[in-house]
Image 1 (cartoon, rainbow, N blue to C red):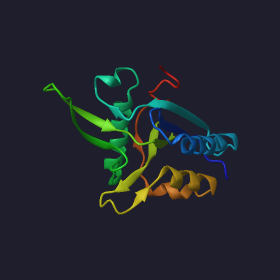
Image 2: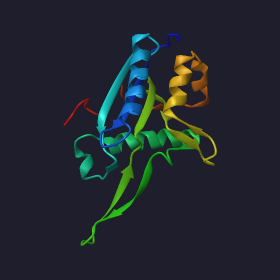
Image 3: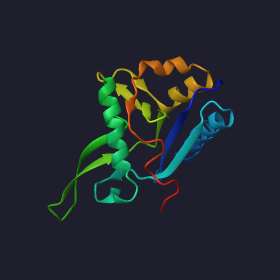
Image 4: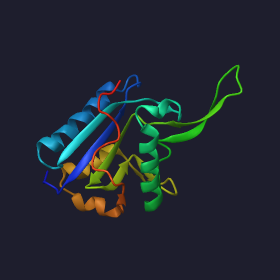
Length: 169
């Protein structure tokens, strides 16, 4: 592993997954190892994302705002967040209520450099044939292939710290 500039990683883990704890912990350990080795300047982890978010549920943790930021990056780069992230409508039995929701993946990872969002994982190209996973990103960092990230164009997000409060209840 080789050191990079002021890159940071934001790792988002779903808190409501079952049977994936060990996989999430392996991803978390790899991210922590990158920071310990000085490969990235900083890491932030939020393990409170839930599977489905609606605007009403998002008032505290701003997961949907982060999702929109990820979507802007994907659009600028000719990628998409689906199928890992899913946007759909949800209805409730016995009511006429229908909400737009986002279903979040078990783990997602964003790479920032300063106020630029460099890459989001998982993602897929527009055709859906080429997929990049969280593991692909971590493999590139661990093998020192930082030029691997040059395939992605950064998007300015005008923030140098995560929106989400780590460990918020």
